[in-house]
Length: 335
Image 1 (cartoon, helix red, strand yellow):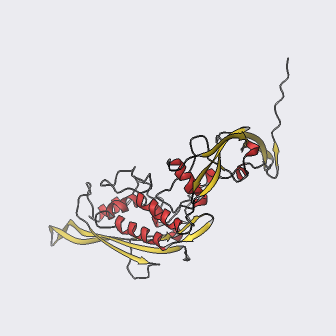
Image 2 (cartoon, rainbow, N blue to C red; image 1 turned 180 degrees about the horizontal axis):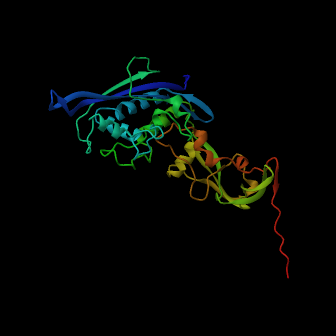
Image 3 (cartoon, rainbow, N blue to C red; image 1 turned 60 degrees about the vertical axis):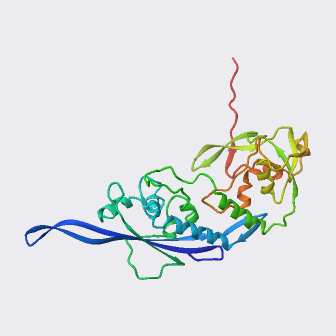
C-alpha cells in the first residue's frame, strides 16, 4: 500500500510465549521435557486520518493519535489474547483469519500457550512500528492490508474498524461488537469539525416526507436473448408537506441538535410540495431520520447526510436503462 497524507501504515507485532512440557523417551526412559515455545503474528494495516465536513475534506493528526491509543489498549498484556482470539478465531467474525485457516486457539494450544480453559499464563510482547515492518523476525502469521484487499467481501481494512469491539473477559463471547459510539470518539470528531467551521449558527430549511412515499416502476432488461424483470422505486411525495427551519453550525449539526431536542423547529408551515425550496432538507417522517457516528469508522458529513438530501436531490426523474423496456400491463378480458 502506498501511503498518502490521509493514510498511515502501522505494523503491530504480537508475540505469545511460554513453555510446553511433553513426555519423551530418553535413554530408554520416559521423561518430562520442557521447552520454550512462542507464536508470533505481524499485522500491517492503515490508520485513516481523513474526515469531511461542510463539503471540505480534512486531514487531522488527532485521528491517528486516537487510533494508536486504541491499538495499544487492545494489545496490552491484559487484552492481547482476547483481541487476537476475536480477530483470528472461528466463533467470532474472525475478520483477519484466512479462509480454511486453523483458528488461533487451536494453534496456541498445540504449542502449549493456552489450555482448554484459557487460564494458562502466557507472556505477551507488543511492538508497534510506523510504516511497513522491515525487521528480520520470522513470523508464524503475517496479515497485510494488500492481501486483505483481495478477499471477496468488501470491508474497510483499517485499524479503527477491525478493533471496534467491546472489551470482554470471555473471548468466546461472540456478541461484543461495539454497537454505539463512545463519548470520547464523538467529542473528538466534533472538535475536529468545529476547527473548520465558522461557529456561527445558520438556519436550514427542512421538510417532512415519509420515506415510504414512492412510486414503483417496473421494466425489463435484456440479458443475452431474453428479458429479465426489474423494478425501481422513485420518490413521490404527498401534495402537501410540513416545513420549517432548524439551526446549527452545519447541516448535520442542525439535524443532530433537533434530534436531541437542542434546537426547535421554527417557522412551521403546511404547504404544497411545489412551494418547498429546492435546497430544503428532508428529515424523513415526523420522527427524524438521520445517521449517527459509528465506532468503527471515521465519519464524513456527506455520508451522514445521505438520508437528509435536498428536495432537488430526492426529486429525480426515472431514466430507463439502456436496452431495457417497460413491462406491458396485463389486459384481462371481461366475460
